[in-house]
Length: 267
Ligand code: IPD
Ligand code: CA
Ligand code: CA
Image (cartoon, rainbow, N blue to C red; front, side, top):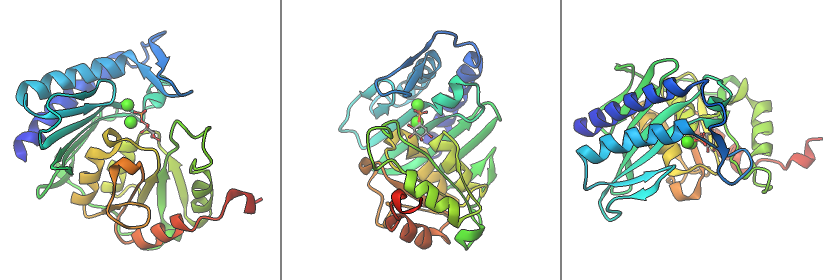
């Protein structure tokens, strides 16, 4: 595990330098990928190239799933790297300093290694199965909040939110009433990293991709938290739904999420 963690760290730090270099200098190098608001920038692409070069040099046999390049390498290999070269592109394009590089390794389909690097704040989150979770190389743990009414949560909205009634708006409003607040950070990997280090007590989202959460899942687990589907069953990453908490709040948040009243009954 250590070698995977070290190489992923090398790649994340190198990609972070690229993101810092491009920050505020994108000018017209921002385009939409398809859905309105789903941006891609020259920084996403340059960051991804740096990561790919390092991972492929060290692990030429491994499979890769990279947000901007798709599937690469031998897809039958039991090692799969899931790469988000810039998680929080909308924030980044607006120079709102909440974005990160996220690199996760699945081994036989299970998230086992994760590195999330926020270059703006120079925060490096790392975890590997059995090795614990760290922030800037010091151990981290999830929070000890046990009541929803005392919790601070985070969530997000997928790019298809304008096209579906399953857009997370009702869940967001309902939990805003029940808690001390729900943040919308704009970077799923940092949302998970903040749950892992106890700044936030829980996170849920629908419409996420493997590269958004691969690293964050193992980080939360190794920090003592719990990650499942909304209903508490084992997470199916392909479903795009994730619930991650400090563990104490997991059942109450899960129950709340699966029984959210429709927005129309609120007004
Ligand atoms: C997005 C961010 C955001 C989440 C979206 C993701 P991107 O990733 O993680 O917080 O709500 O679902 O797609 O596009 O900035 O890499
Ligand atoms: Ca992302
Ligand atoms: Ca991205």
